[in-house]
Length: 333
Ligand code: BYC
Image (cartoon, rainbow, N blue to C red; front, side):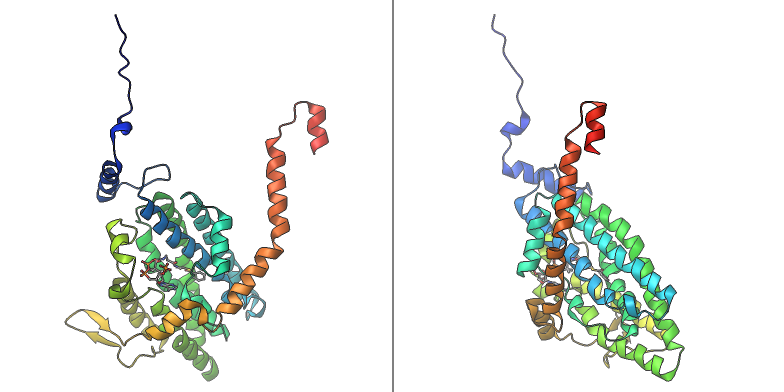
């Protein structure tokens, strides 16, 4: 009698198309894709692009606000700003870790930032000229980021979605602290009121640009929506943002610098003016007011942090070598 080995792996009989079908079914059924799951190479690459650029934005985003830590108007304001900037560092780290689960390395993603290959949010290429800018960043920039990131808590890739849940909790505190800075200024002296309005005027249009190009010019949206990486389009989120801020600005007694901003009773949304897309693409391509300064600061920080990375790697190696005897253990201390 022959013993027939009937053990075989079902996966041996499956082709790319079958894997793709299972993958899309998971997405359609709201099952998260996890790092060890099969995924199309384009899904992986698209996520590496978006999540690493998101991480870079958090880290570069520390610079304009960090600029005001030593000049915050009181100890309380300084402590709050310090905590916020540290939160942004934490967000960057969760997101770099999420990127690494997709099979790339921290060094590669950071190299892409330093070489100019990878983008980061256009908004961080504008200068913070007065204390009111810190309020405007919290209110408008974090406000725009939250709308986008609340959507991303439901993104299809598990590690990215989970990082977003924690980030969103912290961002809502950031937005409130920004609004409160402006609220205090809006009730202050004539000069303070002017400073508040000036910051709103300068940050309004760049905040609208954060959502990316019009849907008709967005290269990744269609595919990202099919894969549920994105669940709302750039224009949809931008409209949500305008509707929210157009109401909140009334509480401040300030105005938004857009003569075309008007409630539309038919659409039940605010109409607003056209964004200067030439300015947007110019900033994205590296020619904004602070692009050079931001990248130089990041490269300098990377070079100066080399000894920290070396020490951490040496410590990690040392922990791998387990001492055999009590005497050896004492010697390694
Ligand atoms: N700036 O096909 P599209 C924060 C690029 S930080 C620069 O629509 P997609 C905070 C886009 O990358 C939070 N580039 O792209 C931190 C693409 O070029 P590539 C930052 C932009 O990906 C500190 C091309 O234009 N949030 O909260 O479908 C202090 C075509 O665009 C921008 C995130 O990063 C831009 N604004 O949609 C305070 C959210 N817009 O990559 C606060 C995560 C577009 O082909 N990212 N481009 O070379 C996203 O949700 C999406 O990537 C975007 C763009 C909505 C931004």
